[in-house]
Image (cartoon, rainbow, N blue to C red; front, side):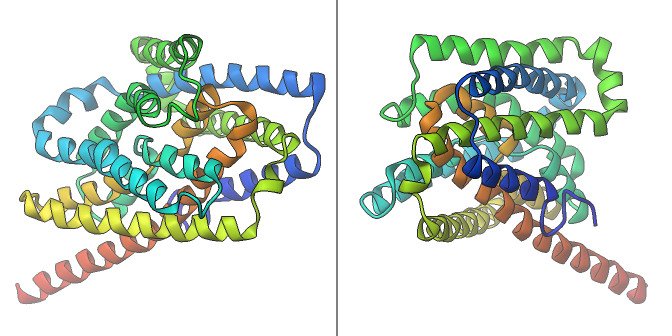
Length: 329
């Protein structure tokens, strides 16, 4: 089974290992400043490559299925935030404020691209539509997520003029530049997807190590314990189950065919770690980043496990149906 659709993502294991390392030996002083600068440079490179990977053909062809794409975007940027606000209201006073901020921030992120497409393909869904929906979500998320954070989390995030400038310089401009350069560098990026993937993952690992080092120095593990982690997992499971149930029901209600319903199920229920980590690092103070990123990391692994199982079940169902059709013929 591929790394994207496996039960446990080795990348998450490595990331959790870096969290442990940052907890035992966090970088401090000049070393911390050097790691922070390297992380900021890596964010620029990360979004430059994300822009270059976005196919213009996918954007153009996506307009042929507006109902599906509108439904996925509504799930990602409306349903999820409403559920996040409800969770924060229900658990205020019962969970650390930083973790509640992390759960709400998770709900404001765009969908994943790679795993949404991979799971849709495995489940025999509409792969072309998955490419379009996930790409739209990723493109819109660069601007929509910071806006939603400013609107709903102004008490926790630093969305000042300086922060907006940082978002534009580190996220929006590199993303736009990468996409504009696609006619010249797109073939190279597509041809070396494994190398680009390693750059993506290395950038995220560097940002996570820097963020957790700063948070540990500020006393993260004095505020968060094993009970909190278990609570995050339970909330994440309930959130994922709710969204997947609602998207599957809604996709039937609006009359989507089975292949498109699969796209809505997988693209609508996912949240992007690759986009969330760098956006968080531009919006939240270093001391708060660990608490904010912890729910994102745990939800990411949970969604991989659940979606892998569901995609395999869809694939078996499609194979059984095809076999039955052949037998009937």
